[in-house]
View 1 (cartoon, rainbow, N blue to C red):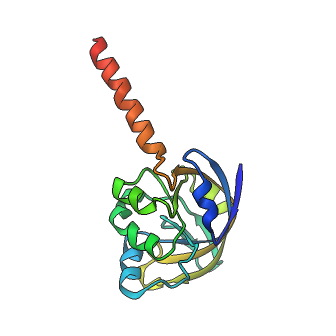
View 2: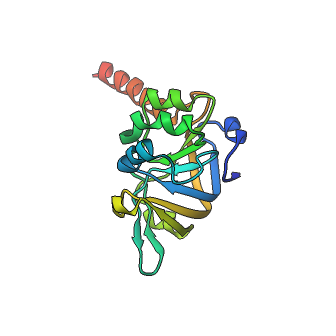
View 3: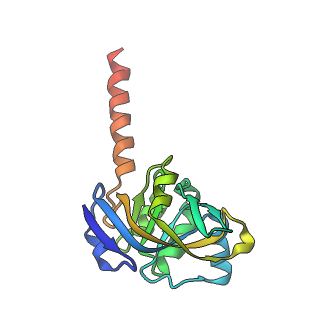
Length: 183
């Protein structure tokens, strides 16, 4: 198990798809609308070495606690990824794979961490709410600044083009072809 703390630096370039990581430090949630707002108005945080979590958390704003924080489908942010990485973001966290376009944006600069969908309560259990940026976007789309401790992640796409999701898809296609011809 590899332990990392934000802000991330060049150490992410040593990670390989499939590596297991415990991440601590500060992360920022951002979904579609937040990406567009950042593109228009700039980052509400320093993007150098930052980690963006593709997530729309459920937050009890009266108590100031995160109730659930499961990942959203990262493929929705494929076309919005390159500007984030160009600004210095070092890692993304999400669910499912990302496109070849996003993989190219990560190449040599950043990684994509996978977090299992359906584990929103587990994610929230290692989180502490720090701040909210762009609250006018609403709870799911706002940028939440979150302190985490030992969030369990898997490197889904590394900085060298290694891609767990593409590997699984290739294996499934090969097995399907074998089954198809065995009939």
